[in-house]
Length: 173
Image (cartoon, rainbow, N blue to C red; front, side):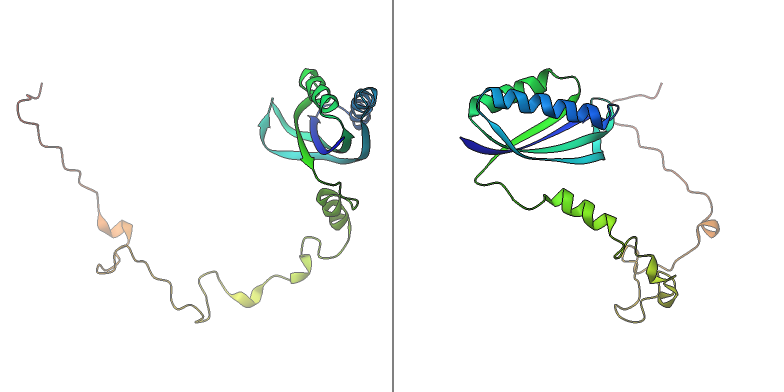
């Protein structure tokens, strides 16, 4: 049997218990066809990078599978038929990770009080305004009009627009 990592996204408007019921039904599909689910991780409701089937958020779930290809194909077919699953991805791997996935480690890091939102930095009053670079990189330059003196917009006056010259052979009507 082959090893797979399978992630699916469920709609945002279903509950975590309904996601668990989906997970159990998918597990049953695999076990009936000779496969097993080695590990599952529920990552919670997260924002999507873009809308998928009118959803801006989704329940993320990871499954580590040890199953034959036919069982995985049936699992994917059932997910396509399910209205609660909006996206899924199955990847064949050489071996499963025994440690928590990167998403779970990230969630653990977010729960710790460590740096948090870096609120301990203070008001950053030592930097001055954004234009002040303390001579490290030299002055800011505007390369667009090096040879022209800067004139404020108010002092320039109205902008005159030249009309296009008529093309030969055409008459203005």
